[in-house]
Amino acid sequence: MGHIDQAGSEPATEGEGTVRPQIVVRARRRALATAVLAAAAMLAITSIARVQEGVVVLVNGEPITSLDIQQRAKFIEMSTRKAPTRQEAIDSLVDQILELHEAKRYDIAPTDADVNTAFANVASHMGVDSQKLSQMLASGGASAATLKLQLKAQIAWTNLVRGRYKASLEIPDTDVEAELQLHQPGQKNEVGYEYIMRPIILVVPHGSPDAAYEARKRVADALRGRFVSCTDGIAFAQGLPEVAVRDPVSKSSADLPQQLRDILDNTEVGHLTPPEQTDEGIQMFAVCSKKESKTDTPEARKLRDEMFEKKFGAKAKRYLADLRRQAMIEYK
Image (cartoon, rainbow, N blue to C red; front, side, top):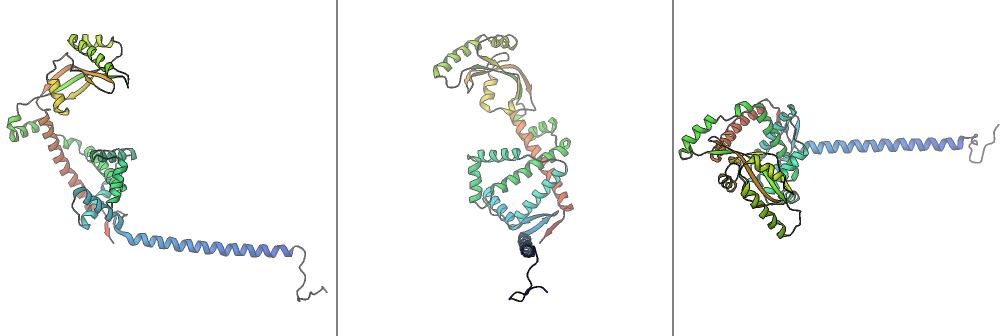
């Protein structure tokens, strides 16, 4: 019979003293893991519940939250200086989602670079940089993300509508002429020009003193005096030291500011425009062709753009209305 110790327990057999603590440790680890998993599950359920509480509208399964609506309302107010109704903010977000979904269906997806460029352009038009615009939006209760998402939708939607309805959105020259005669009879005899030009730059190294520019301007004046045709003049200019002759560019007078149109109107074909100082040096343009056009005058271009925008707007509105009728829009 084995020996009984004073506590009344039988002595442990060889190895038993190390096995039992290991069993206890494993049990405690399993209990701890179970508790952690239960806590994580409870936290996830709570987080989901909180998110669901913030969802106001589902558009084809995509949620619009109270925060989305709040930031969109603030953005609209900052843009229009008029506070929108809650429903107007919701409608704006619904349209945005539908436009992005439809564009994605046709594999039209603006890149982050496209959106960032558009964002920077908005900032530039406001006279600030992108960082300052982001700060302005945040301080106004909106966010940079709100504007960027709207810009993304605008880019995608414009490309989609233009692409799908390109033929029907074209404005015939006859329609432009008819509108000019109807609404602007005094402009019907106006003409525009299609120019083909060759930029000629007399290079001046960056950082050169004013005297260097003046010297190159005298060379430019001398070149201008003997330049009587693009055929001979271009070849002569290309043989001069530190002179760059660029590839031909085509410009319509409708695309040019009035000051430049006046300069080109006063420059005969085969001659050079007056020299002007640029970052590269002294620049002139050789006017190699000047073709008259009665349908691409500044006035006609402006009217054509207005007619296009009107037609585009009507087409886009009908398209979006169809998407709304087909969409699953669920208010919570």
